[in-house]
Length: 257
Image 1 (tube, rainbow, N blue to C red):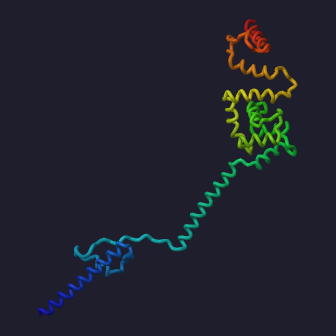
Image 2 (cartoon, rainbow, N blue to C red):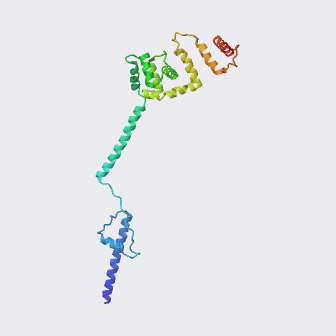
């Protein structure tokens, strides 16, 4: 009887030792994330976790491993990302090409108004003004001619066009329309205004009406900047040209009458 009890105790201790070793190995694998998910039919390990002995067994479920995509899914995902990146790059590239200045496009734009000539004449200029939405006599056209350094009123040569439009980075009608406000703003700068004013004299010198010379033209600008509207600070003994002396005399007589 005693021998039978000893045998039972020996077998029980052996089983407990085996179960403890299995438990230790299981948790070691679990820490290394090498265990698989436990299914509902895995009654053996399930019964192992149901053991109430806190010394030997824990109730912590092994973490569920993330599903790795199948090879086909992985390739599809990579292809989708690649296509998306390519479309984004392609769209950016096209947009950049449209925004970047093109000498070829600028040349084609010039010949829309020049026809077969190497100069935009009065007829082409009229169409050009209509397309950009300004009247030919608008002051912004004078500023544009100044930027192109045009030598003759009503004409833009090929060289003037390419040089000036390149400096403005305009190769289409739309781009020039968007630049008109910038051209007008140049008149607000005193230095630019003086340069444009002086340029206007040479630009219009082909006119048959030559009333004043260039010095008188520049003196008119200085007169407008320094003399009060009521002419109260005008010095008749100053170094003003006779033309302005006559203007002041005429104006005062008109005010008195």
